[in-house]
Image 1: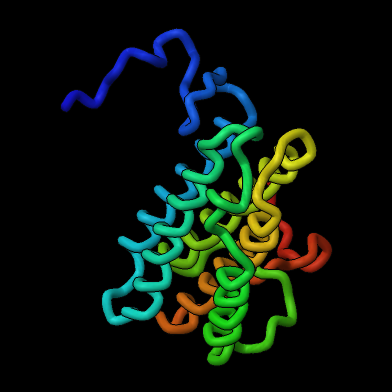
Image 2: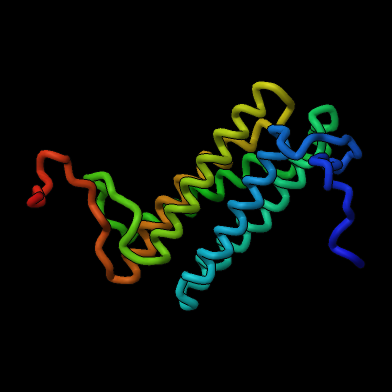
Amino acid sequence: MRIYTRQGDKGMTRLADGIQLAKDHLRVETYGYIDELNSHIGLLICEVPQQEADLLADLQLLQQELFDLGGELAFSSAAQNASIWQVNAAWTTRLEQQIDRYSEPLPPLRQFILPGGSRAAAQAHVVRTLVRHCERLLLTLSHAECVNPEVLPYLNRMSDWFFTVARYLICVAGEREVLWVKAADRPQSAV
């Protein structure tokens, strides 16, 4: 089977229900960013230590669910209905429970933190920001077209999940979080 079809050479793509849209249509753009997000989670998985088997399993489940979400979005607005929707409130609840679990060993958050501390934690922050981007695109799409109402809470919680996981990864690695320092309190460099 060939991977190329030449169907999209003129900037159009066909959705799962046969509707043809321009590749820069907001629906196509949105599921494209979900795919990019999923790829960055794959990169994060490569950075997570193998002894973190539970976290690796949680990340792989998120990849599966994001693929499901992309599948939902690959149907036109007219085809959107509960029979194709897979994202549900239980997924969001599970993320909340996992946030609580990954938060247990963490010190209280008293300051803003910056991305960094370790490669894995920095990549978790990259993923967090991509989740926020997807969330914004989905919100915009939901103003114009039909989308599963459970998707926005799920993505919102997912960004909190990746923030917590970034902190968790620094903690289990024995590294220090990179703290934000107010401009007035930063050392001034000599010019």
